[in-house]
Image (tube, one colour):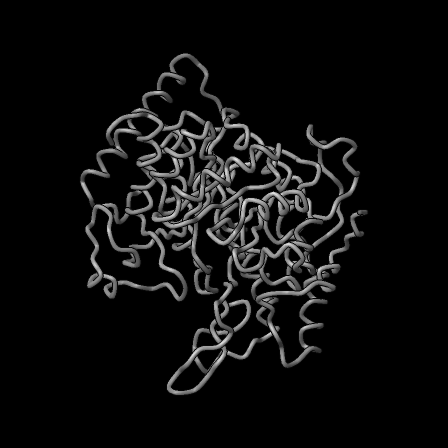
Length: 437
């Protein structure tokens, strides 16, 4: 049948999951009116540049590194915490470039990743039922601050804009300059083995740069002083996302899309948005909203998604089969991946869609399964922080259950610390290099 017309508000006609119910609708309207008049946080030019890079990832010419907090807090909008995450993503990308011999596309779960889906809207506290903490853009972590507050939507906008402003300023000021990688202080990475592996890679890159300088290929225009770092978030709070959805000029034509319109609807709150496991219903509000935006988007794929429903989702969200439009972010658990991932890969290949997957804990198996299925792992999507937290057991530090209380800071899911995140980068690099890291 004919595809119904899309508008930024057409999602309101569909059933919605993870919705927020506010007591004061007048205050919500006031907050959304403020957001609708505010400038975009990101631009169509940046969004299209990312989509072009993700096209290379989908074609196997680049590797995607996506990482950051499970859920940001407003308190994370602070220079040291922002810098530590930038540095960690840069360190990991150097390892991946070295291993995969491919450019790395970097997307941070930053500058807007506040909201979190919850399995239940309420929880028990001291014998009382109170609303669950849904993220700083909805309510507060303190049990006395759990009533959803519309003014937090406006605060989320300004914290996102401020964070991205500092990211851009840091990159422009040389935080990623490859001429001086040893200025990227390794912070909490005290493990001598990991440090030695990292230094070996840095030595190799430094040697290459020295060679380029010697033969005169080194210049200010060489792209060695800075990198692109894009922002991403789960598009969970649709009223907020709608208020920052703008019809803007298409910056440059896409080779995969015949007769691309001169103007398109862009979500200007982040470069990349994804649909979560709990909100990807085929007839639901989130899928309806996502099908109309021109941004590259992600779909969380897990054990509960059948191959048939996955193909239906791809057909709804990417009917023109634009390469680089969709990223499949797969997570099955290490017990399930061997039985579930191959069927999803085969279904996508048979459908004619070009897409790619990002994997969390079951990384080693994922790399092997993709190779066996004549596919490839396009990237990794990780919940991580540059802080020395103790939230995940294992790794070269040998963190055990009893160590978790030492520095467990997350109000949401546990995150990899700097050391553990670098280890995963070494795992991928080692696979591509076929050497025992």
